[in-house]
Length: 408
Picture 1 (spheres, rainbow, N blue to C red):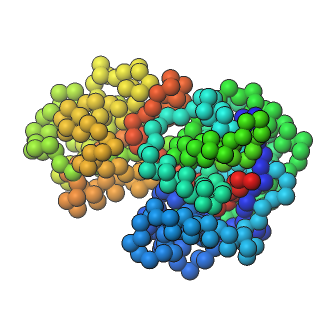
Picture 2 (picture 1 turned 180 degrees about the vertical axis):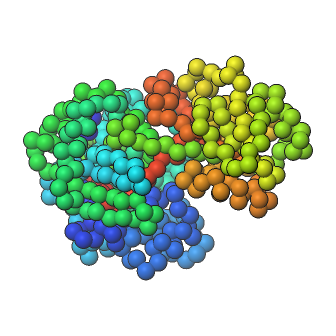
């Protein structure tokens, strides 16, 4: 088995991409999905969030939901909105968000490489979310949400992908959020072979986003595996980018209370390890070990004393430093996955969202963090360890519906 492989993509017919593409299923709520799909019968949200087509209040994990996903996907194919390519192909995929551009390659990636650690993970998965994606794949007989992968710096791979992304794109759509999505189809056997060979020489790929999708694909693949017979379910749908092209934004924290402390008592506790400086404007951290704090209508800049920094790949992350020196010892928040006193806010929502959550009285304090870097993510994955929950927020997001992988 090769590390990556071309495949017969299922994608919008010419001129239909704008009707189809949708944000990833897990970044929109039920209400947002229903609103975005209103008046758009071919939106891929009817496949990725099919509960929007069932009576309100339906259990999103009910069998009827997955059956509806399969029905909706079949309807899109029957009406010619989605078509499957005749020959195995690669696809160049470019995302443009403001002045940021990244160009990657849509592939199917080896589950054998995933299971043996050549495709590296950095997060734990939740069984309920895995089960959901397994049922979705089995119902539709397709992988409809791509995993975001990164490869370490490799100029030859960059050049091969760039060679695909030239001329007029097969699909060119600007989504509701202003992100431009461009896709180029490549079925040239010579170029496909060159790309496959080049990636065979890359020592590892890294999962940036999509741990539940890849874990679910592995479970389905294991169930369908036939020794000595390679099949489509031995691979999972992915888009692979050069690691230096990916952009990670801050993933911030809001907490409901100060663990019984007054505002002044809390600030006094912080001064044991941090310098605390009031700020007249919102604080967006600009360096490792620096945090923004919004509390009682006031912003503060917190700087952790360097003696508390760590060279450990996990303990040295800013998200870990916040937990080790504030959330756990002062606020009593130990389990980020289960504690109902903490919530997480992606950096795409801005610092004003942190202010809003606190000013509304819903939360007592908000922490703005310095973003995790791709180099930090790769060091954690190389060490065989995992990052704390909600450590990375990637932007721009891949679209659902642009290319899907049918399991023959």
